[in-house]
Image (cartoon, rainbow, N blue to C red):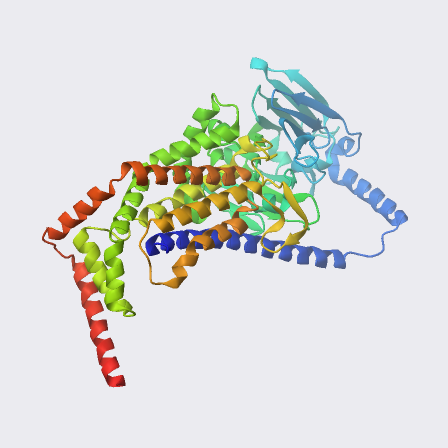
Length: 616
């Protein structure tokens, strides 16, 4: 048995595309991690070696005195005791600290950390800050994050909201009227909170009417596979209405020259956004990726500028989003926040509309009444296969026509022997006379490539699948690993995914079945093609989400069933043969491309004959 050349070309291109995509991403990520580790090592080596307890105490005292001096008219706020206030709604619980009058951490009620199985915490490290510089005296300034706000309180607001507020008042000088108020509004069932900064006498507090907001954010590991989580962590922003993003490790800083609506960090399934309702006038954001052994995915620092209109009192309206990277939730929030969900980015952006307008609506429809996400994926697969069934039928019909011509192709092989050029010319003539398109089986396979990449993006970014078990898989958003080796195999890893095995086996069965339905090929390499693609899949799929490998398994099972039914009960091979014979009797018109191709082939044949004669 031999494998059809055109189908083999289609599968080969598909395999090469898969391999290139995953190999390129993996190499870029490893290079970024190596560079970051090198920089961290250099920085660590340059640190002073002497660090005694006495020196640390002296440094702390000096720092404390410096903070008091810098605080100027806010000296009473330079030192104090941290107090924590709590506010919550149905989706999260937020802790606020009076130091800086800012959020201390956010606990998401509906999500658990994959490793600790405790509630997901966002912005929970000391690195996380949100503040700005204020003028405290002549030629002196201080960061609000270093000052202790007072009068912290939680009050009930309208429509079930909660209002958290802090104040920072000046001293007994002539500038005593200067004060700052931070107000946070938590709405029921919403992951987004409003953050209003109220400045009294902003001209005295700010330099040249600019509020320079500093937002530091540290993303901690939430998933079981840290490397994969880092590969899917990005910095995103909306600048002058245009969305852009950068993957952690590929670029370390971006500067903004146009108004910015928001900046955000996505660590695969969780997003944090800082939103300016009146836009940031400019700024920059930089980020880094710590050492691999740490549980920190990324650290980012955004320095954003807000122009404050001169007035007795000014209010800067902001919003902060702490929540899941859920396309439906972010779409409802508006401002283009849903663009941070990776439904197709970069060179694969062409599949995003397919996800937005086809796959997500179908998935949401089934989610409304089916409780098992594994079954939803199977139903989604069935619908997709029905939608592309015309292509599938066309492919199988082409294969049936090629099978009908198998005896005549065999005669051509006997006639021409090893003369591949003459064989190719007569074979094309045979296809043209019979009305058969030799690419009929290849084109439909290539057209299904966008569907795979769309589903790869969708399953990889769908937070609904996170932590959901199905059959032997504990988490559909991660690879299933019922078989572990205790050591690492290059390219494969330290485990074997059972869903990957089912995908590989069903792919092999499809290849073997297709091979039996296609004409023989003279190229001996073709007989090995059915085994090459499954081998590619074994190494590519083993670390991918089990939702994707489950989809591929179901899709392959449907393909096998369709092949059997169409070939045995729908396609009438006798009618196909009769139609081929009828086509051969009709007058044929050659296209210009066919004429040029035959001319080239004829010239090559004549040249080869001359070379053979010269050789004799």
